[in-house]
Amino acid sequence: MSNLQFLVVEDELIIRKFMAQELAQYGRVFEADTEEKANQILGNIKPDMAFVDLNLSETQNFEGLNIIEKCKQADVPSVVLTGHQDQLIVDEAYKRGANHFFSKGDIASAEGLDSSITNFIKSLNKLEVDEFFVNEFITESESLKSKIQFLKSQVLNSRQNVLITGPSGSGKSKIAEYVHRLINPESEFVSKNLTEVSENLIESELFGHVKGAFTGATEDKIGLLEKADGGTLFLDEIGALPKSTQQKLLKVIEEKTFSPVGSVKAKKVSFNLITATCEDLFEKINNGDFRLDFYFRIKGIEVEMPALKERREDIIPLLNFFLSKNKKKISLADDAKKTLEKYDWHGNVRELMALSKELLGYSKGYISSEDLPQYIQENSNPLEKTKATNTDGFLSPRMWEYIEEKGMLDLIKKIEQESFAKAERLIGRKVNAMSKKLNISKTMYYRIEEEYDQAKKVVLQ
Image (cartoon, rainbow, N blue to C red):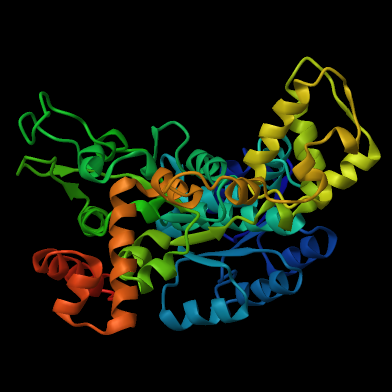
């Protein structure tokens, strides 16, 4: 971080030299012991951060407040380090433009600067983020770069849970890995896509289980929560988590304890939680499928990843990045580039990566527009085309997609509830008439009715 510059304004020599020594490992340090010297430095350079003591003389004039104001005018982030903790002074410092306020006794120890201060410094390092965009997450989008830079600052300065939203294939997992490295790169990163776990096994997957907890539990199993202890737990597609399990995980987040399935023994656990989803969680909340209190617990810092069609300037750089990883080299004609930039990329970055593999399999190395797949040339959705042509059998492509995403049991439940809703619209909620219309028993009717009514409510327990 040698590119950073700091200003330390402190009249006490020992504290000023301590700060200068600690900050020197991150960049160049300029020192001032008076308001006049501080203003002179601010007139010549623009530091990346200023550390300011409020009282620079024995007169108790709080000259540091004026310096804070100068920093604000120069767009320089400022941190107040002072022995004065009166709330009026705190309020005034923030009014003048201070970004953070610390007591001197809270920020220094034999081990060095407090982690809060070092995190503020790390959040300034834009070079690291630029390297991430060059080597791992390719983008030319300035708005996306700003969004990730802001996310980095928030994560380092607050350590809240992180929720990443956006369409499938937009890079949510890559951002989750990056956040983990920012928080605690030496710890475990435990990742799981919840759509890959059947509903009846999800609690065993998360909490683990003890031998004999259920049929098939022939030995103890360590769950994801325990594996992530001291590190990061990334739960992808959090919208697929059953509502009953949401309540239990909410309790874990709040109390930092859990019990494996089949056990009453509580275990302590501490982890950084990152979740992601391609679903509209507010729609699921309104439908009664997602708990509102659980949403507010996991969201903490929320970042929305844009679809690839919303950052078309990244299409060719991304494709070149994927192609560059292979020994075989590909050249794209100008008309091919224009066609690719116009296509809507329904599968986002993941679809683009798949195309790169397809192009590398071609017998030719020079790719023109007419060499591209027909659906790309026509800018049509290949999935929709499949749906339109594949009409064989009762199971529609849309139903099969739903099974792959949610599972067969969820599809059956959805068919039950939509059939119930349609029958109700046709004949009203009359038990005998609806049971006959749907050709079901009254016992089944009451079960579906209860689930249908419950799904329409948002229950906060």
